Length: 239
Image (cartoon, rainbow, N blue to C red; front, side):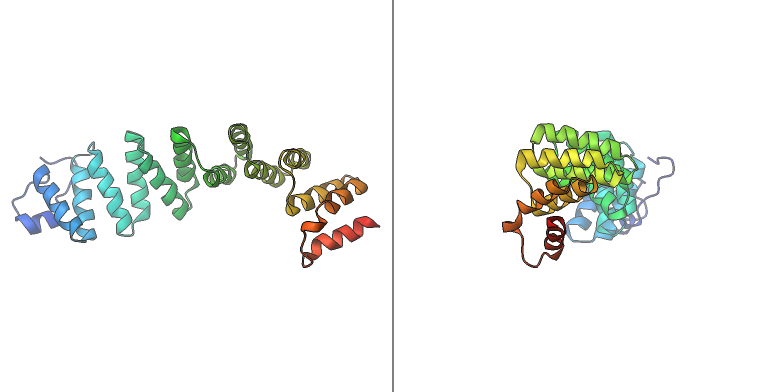
């Protein structure tokens, strides 16, 4: 059985002789197992790739091809094969592989797609929520990052997500939205020193000097004596 464009693995022929057909399921399965279980990853990769090309709809061989490409230092090839597996099976492990390899290869499209699918499947932990929002920004879609983060905040009500919203608005240059978000953060969760400094800075820019001073003064007992930027700004505002 010879599929279009398929080539027999030389490692199969090495074990079984030159008369082996391009794809014999039992022979290829056994050959792959022998190589993989004995740590011969290059040979296992080659067998999986040849088998997958011969029977292109066989997802298990495609998965082994993707795994073998990772094991043998072929990340771009691995990403392409994981994408096929993910599209055809929607397996979380395949989408997770796209996230992992997308990050390694700086392929933001692959990383975002994987995170979106994982989010739809079972939700994301806070760290990956941040990663997905940053991914949207890297694709030039900060508004999409805001919509996504606000939806996540409605579900999780965590300060980390609101902080991320404020950072995205800041990078967009939307000062008013930054201030509104930081005020909401302060009202719901209180302020860290860093957030207080940011709020004070924005208030100062708006000419609300007394209010900016009050925001900083509230945090003075939490600030290290080594935080020169805080004490300098507090001193400036006191005048």
